[in-house]
Image (cartoon, rainbow, N blue to C red; front, side, top):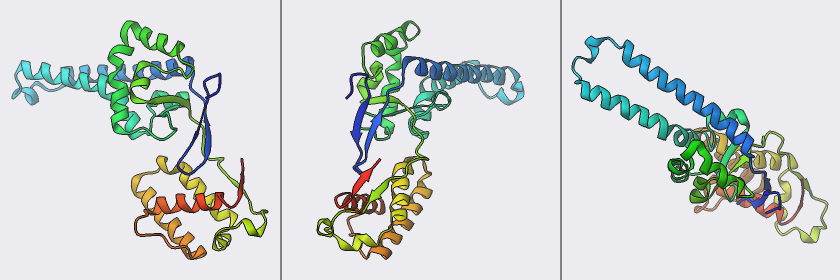
Length: 252
């Protein structure tokens, strides 16, 4: 960790990443936008109930109508942040506009449990117009609110991965190459693999699965290094990348 709060982590692909925590200003902007969207949803709910034809609601008692409205409003308040952060890989509409994202302290994407856990703490963080969250963020070098401490997460500036183009240096002496067959993999092939490993969390599950399978088959065909039965296609690609890093110098 750097004095200014930046964190350096190493991913399972052995890529060192520097995470820049989002400031209070960026997080406030994201929260303001998300709150506006929640407000629009509340208004839409009210108008829906007002404009709904009475004939369609005749089978519901007034108590059930009130209970339904309360339930939907509850889901909007408590589910909005958690659902978006789980489905959008750590982002809500507000965070996407502000260019920030929630990740684990390790730099990996958050899970559903972490997404739900950190947002349940809004019951505390949101007290006094988020004064508690602001105090917690000011006391933390990484601008963490209480929900981030509980879930082990950090909000970072979302760095685009479109420029990820590792530059592999094969100029090492021949005696340092432990697996000569990996030399059959071109630099461009490695760039493709690395780009996929960086961006896979942004892909739809089926696209991610098919892409990993196709890349795995390509690397096996070119290198002759087979995937073991215990390895998934992504595990195999990570392993190949790790093997090459042990034999080459990565310049970033």
